[in-house]
Image (tube, rainbow, N blue to C red):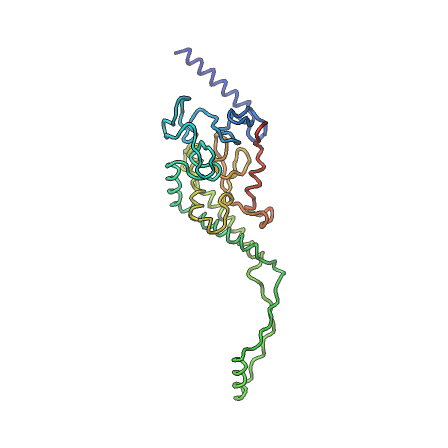
Length: 306
């Protein structure tokens, strides 16, 4: 027994030393190679950021300990070999697809259904829908200094006849108004002001969507990912023209990358927040929420090592 305790203590000290000397995710220096695809990895990775392969000896679906011989997790029952996404056809080791956010387990589906009843999720969906509408309006808005002269309209035949009759009884018709200037819809400045307020409100609501205190990293990741899926289903993006993977972006605190969702993050620990994603071709740089998701993802530092 004492020998076992001694071995455990030495292993614990070795792990602690490794954690102190290991490079962080953000510094860009690899620690080892992924056993599945050979990509550079760090000791705090839970899954490979390139191929998505599992790198730890516990269940990445729920966090429960697992033996190498376990076919399924003894706690949540999810398979040790992961789950294939029916839409993206990629293997996942978390309850939601790291690429399209689709629920891959019954528990994940229940989490989404529960999230759809959350008033903050419903409010976020309403605001994001409004952001998309304003973004579409920005495409056709004109600057404030551009106006279109309104063509003067002549009197109709009925108006001429009425004026003639009124003149016979001594009534002098009013002078025909001169041509005025009108604008086509709202100006870009007017739309932009409302747009910025909608983005600000959406970001604030999304920051208020917090998981229960004491949640594990797996529970937190599932909670936040379920919120995005719930928002997408409430908004019914296909009807509003909002790209499914660009509505909300997950700003990760650990690896400084804008993820599609928290399930895409490779790190064991959890941290980050949702932010409204918009099109930088329409909205100028520096505008709150003006961040183009697709470009950020393509610039990730994780690359396969040949």
